[in-house]
Length: 316
Length: 144
Image (cartoon, rainbow over all chains, first blue to last red):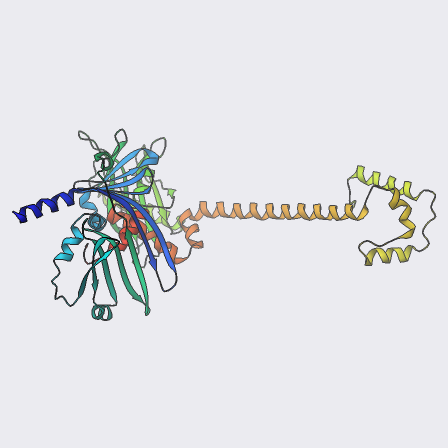
């Protein structure tokens, strides 16, 4: 009976909704670096992250949504393509870190666990042992809110040339019943998705450009139940030394260049590029090249590759 | 070369003539000139009559003119340099591409940072400050 009550209590707590601020920064011996903050809202298995008012990410178990407020669009990032966002989802998911910490045996030589009360709040602290820190050169510490089962602070210390460099995350927690509307993409916006599926045609995307291999290709498709249409393509070529990059962006032309803007924003491209004309590009489509390689050489090289592609008959 | 505009120059000469009317030609011209060269505002008894009657302060006018000329020269020089710089930038961007020109003037850390952001966005679907936050969570023993 008591066990059942505990399970019910646990379920109740996990389903509660919370909001607050996340402050994150780095600190070396004397200086605070790269200070930043976000607002978050968490409910059941959905999280809303706001960097600026009206521009937010929604992360959920089923879909990932990024709303680009300035151009009135909802971008759905196909979940399978972007596994790298699970960390941010997990830290704000009530009970997730708590359960991992609970599973650590009391006699672990890697972790030291403590329980304290600060300002009438019960806090569980878990930290890597000093021995572990000396051996590995890094240390993680979590302060967890016992009632809400959520982290309120995390520190990661790394020895950088003998001196400690600390990443700090502080999370404020306010418990409140939040409306489901907060966790839904706005109605009336145009819906797009970033996906691996191409519905339009083949695009000329060489396997290698100037000896740099092609990375993953993403397509910007309209997101409709009945019809899905490719409106843009993004692929990147990045040298191992990270000193040369080439981004190829195909986009269907429209009056406001909206398709290009969406791709730029989706992939954090802070650079405009130059238009490239190739025989493969059909009417109504454009290709922009964003690169730090000199344009005349790159243009000539791409033309040669396109010609080889045509002659080999492998299709454009 | 005239310090003033033609009209003002004429007015100035008229004023000087008027001030000098009835006065004898200064006997100590050489001394006066030396005094003028060596001192900012020499006291010249021979010109005291003119100074009293005149509304024109010759030294202020000369100083003002010099300042105006210096300002004009600075503006012209700035405009010339700016225009040349702008023209060179436009030609460079048009020929080499914006990415090449911009990265030529950026330090390596900024370029790598910019590329990392694109990589993060490509791997996580998160961009901006949210991506920065997510980066701190990578390799966390409880989250990955």
